Length: 391
Ligand code: FEO
Image (cartoon, rainbow, N blue to C red; front, side):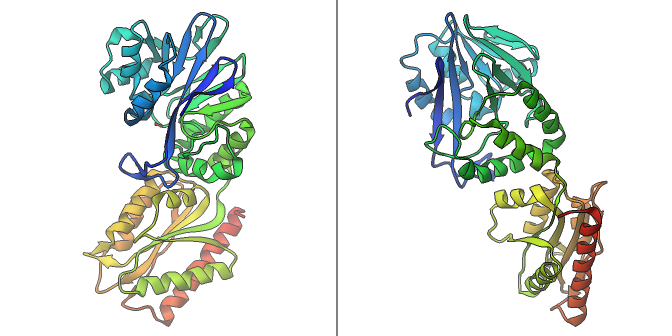
């Protein structure tokens, strides 16, 4: 990929990773991703903002082949998908320094082979003059690591936000096609940012005060209409949950499956939205997206070795770790002769602001009384959603 012009003196560099399908050996990437770097050329100095994943270092270095000088490498975030090629850039430009937050400096020393004297720590609100251009650094910790900062370039009102507002989306478009980017951006928020909702809320206030004309993240396309992604984040972070049940389940011999089928019908009859996921082959990114808006989680599980199916337990751990806006939780399922499936799931999901409802568990195949209990549970959930004003 050749460097692309954003404004006079500001270039988009980096790499599109069309084929990557997994991040952190955990997160599926159905749409690939990109590692964006940006070059800002002032009358006296030049700064490179972020680098790329180490697997794409050659692509970045070929983009820099015609760039005579880089004086500063701004490292917004120490994670290797952005910092991984910093040693290569420092080797090419022996006079250059890394500019990072005070906390990032220590983390970069831990993660990369970089001499300490080549890293300059900047304070929150600090500025860097490039001659006729100035960069201003704004700390935004816990997006999703504790050291993160963003860079504002006031002359052109460009805010370089690294992971914040990013999307795992490989696309040839420099600028966001809003319809196309919405789901990858929501997936990214759900997987990476949602556990840090409180911090993100504060950062959104700061971003609104800055009032950028362009938001340039380090994954996915650039936003020329920042309100699109800022408003979306506001909804995901702060809007009340929807009248929706998130229902991950596993069935082994069909009994839990029959309960899920009946229960989903009972919820639909009462006007409750449902998103049902068979965990045998579910994309955990889709699960995370569903958790952004759901008011209730109902976990469907058979009993295995005295507890929930391991795939279900895994999904419950994920739901708890992502810190969604859930308000109610319960378990439905079937058992053969006993076990503690419901208690073990509840222990994972329990949180001060989540009410755990009575589970519906049946012995063997579900019968009339079990279906009646599922109807009752669906009625309870619909009533609670209505009382809370969820729509
Ligand atoms: Fe894209 Fe947290 O690194």
